[in-house]
Image (cartoon, rainbow, N blue to C red; front, side):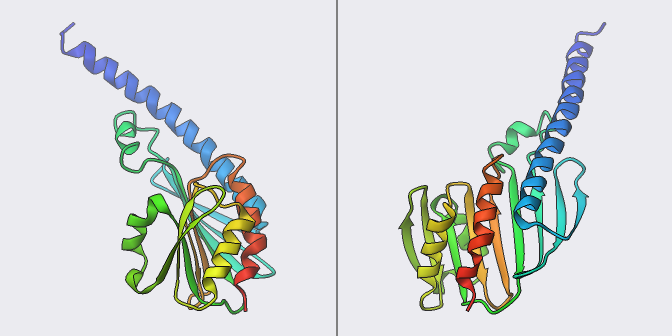
Length: 209
């Protein structure tokens, strides 16, 4: 057997084994993220659409009560790719949950809670970032930046952090009155995601006028 053939076979076996193991783990992760999110929002109907095979899902929920609907995206590290997965740990770094909840009613204004470690990225994503009032807020769990453009919103944001126990897994939260929308960017952790989302949903009433 050629000296070149052996390492090629070994690499192929490694990649194949990594694919099935990674696919299985991502399926498991997507399962508990969706279960904990559904448990927190109690949707009347759900719809999931797979994206990229093993790396995520787009979803929509029909809600009732204080909210019209929810939608979002679950993205996971490419664990099925034995070669690219190590690179993703340096770039993407972790699995992510993006969640939008459509409000039923009038919201107080626009305000953001941004984790200190995420503020550089948020600066590029938040429209009119430089025009917002800003305050560094140290909670029991982490350090956040509060951004607002409506008087009194900073008090609501502080109260939201304190009542929900927002920790280092919350990257970005936004209350957006113009769009009647609440946005969450969370690093999901099993058995903690659901606890936070339940508390968050219960306390979103802070932002209604």
